[in-house]
Amino acid sequence: MFPRSFRLFLLALPLVFVACREAKVASYRVPKEKDPEMTPVAATTADSTPPAVGPFMQAAGAGGGMAATPVATASGPGLGWTAPAHWVAKTASAMRKATYAVPGNGAGADGDFSVTAFPSDVGGELANVNRWRGQVKQEPLTEADLAKAVTRIEQNGLRIAYVDVGGGDGPTARMLGAIVPYAGSTWFFKLGPASSALIAREKPAFEEFLKSLKPAASP
Amino acid sequence: MNATVRQFRDFFVSLRLTVVLLGLSIILIFAATLDQVNLGVWAVQQKYFQTFFVLWKFGEVPVPIFPGGYFVGGLLFVNLIAAHVYRFKLTWRKAGIFLTHLGVILLLLGELFSGLMQEEYNMRIEEGETKNYAESYQFYELAITDTTDPKFDDVVVIPKELLEKGAAIQHPKLPFRVVPKAFFSNINLGRRSDEPTAPPSPATTGFGPNFVATPIAFNYKPDALNIPAAYVELAGPEGTLGTWLTVYIPPQMMTMPPQTFSTPDGHTWKIALRPQRAYKPYALTLLKFSHDVYAGTDIPKNFSSRIRLATPDGRDDHEVLIYMNNPLRYAGLTFFQSGYDGDHTTVLQVVRNPGWVLPYIACILMAVGLVVQFGIHLTGFFRKRRAAAVPAAA
Image 1 (tube, rainbow over the protein chains, first blue to last red):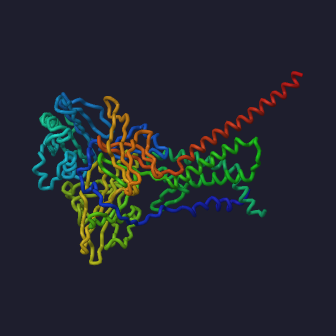
Image 2: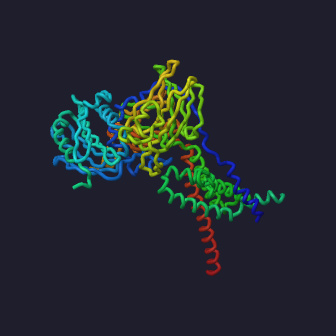
Image 3: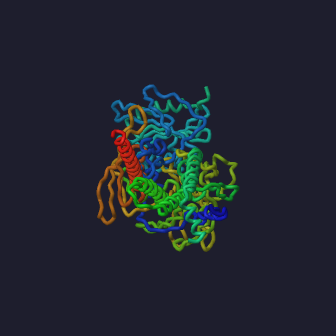
């Protein structure tokens, strides 16, 4: 039809337009913000329920449906346990290793017990304990206070850090949490936030649960 | 018409070009679909479609190996227009073909507009919280905030591309230079006390020296978590202010302590890596979040957010309920209910797509065009049959 060189030229023409998104430094003034970094209390039930997205939501956006905020749970070797008989196992989700409903039985609404695991140390004990404290409206602890607040249990080769935070009135006033580093990941076991009465009643069961923890592969 | 112009014309109006381009599109879409397993949907869009060439990295040098979506789509667009202009004859017999091709042209334009102008952010709001910014899903920025004023924050943001480049940055609002030392798209963060043999940290101040940031490969899977990090040195006129490790970990995972410092001029500052923010001239407050799950599972059945939308001047101040398939459309943005985090935090997807209506119009045009064209042929066919039947009957 016409010389090859001409065709090649035409095909190469768009190379001229190949350009990167230009990145620029910007500056602006905004009203003073309550930065989440400064208010760990604001992190809600962070470790246990990362954003869930129903598959049906993908179709909702005419402009594209990549709605899932990416969250990774830890993979690799896991932990095993024996749960109290009266806790009702619920279906585990992609984000949770396990979920149990703890019946309220007169001590307020049912409690939620969750098991999650994330890669690396997820910020360490202090940050996570303070985040939990935030969920029951408690002030954050300092590193020095942490030692007093944490109960340590050595069990089946696992180092378990266990806290009981909050108290007082209200449906979400108190919670129990345990942090267990294992095989490069950090496992979180959390009961609540729930009423103080329910947490007080379930505390022995929670401790029994922690004592049953062991690497899943071990007999 | 001189020979060169004719060559141009013949090239762009040729049906052979159309066929070649359609063939290239098929290969491109096929390759991109396969690669989505490795890269995820975001990266595939950018690598294969929102580009003129698909680039392959040989070492550090990107080499174009295949025409990308903009190239193929762009040429197809020009080809279609040129062919119509060249062969255009206003006749009813071709009305359906014109409509169908107009639909294809609109579809191509719609894709171009979406690729160039679409913005996709998210807003994560807790009950009672008010937010006036949305956050990017994929881009990060280093924010250096002058927190001295009790009422305002003066923020200087440096996009991650500049952190990757590593060149020193001097901004008139900063009394120091920002020297990016390293940027990692994904790291493993461990406590130094747990890894005593790890090499010393490049960080000299903030929480950095207590942590070991080990760069790991970026995980493209859609449900993967990547933790970006950067080492940044701040250099004042009298010497260095220190090197910080800045890390972004999603708030649903954990909260890192804020890193603050002060300069000799008495100003206090905060330094943080965070998702790129898009501030809005209005604010959303989450009044109530509700969600149900299917009985016996954690699978969400429905969820909704009661939101208060208010502008600072008070011109707009109303409540809206956002739920599945009932997004809020405001100021050119669409807020979809996309997820949640616990029982009291909503996640909204915030999309700006000025071209969103084009694919719908394009599809209607194409459908009408095909029906019209088929109808024209069908009536012609019946007419011929009738004409043939009449003499036979006679």
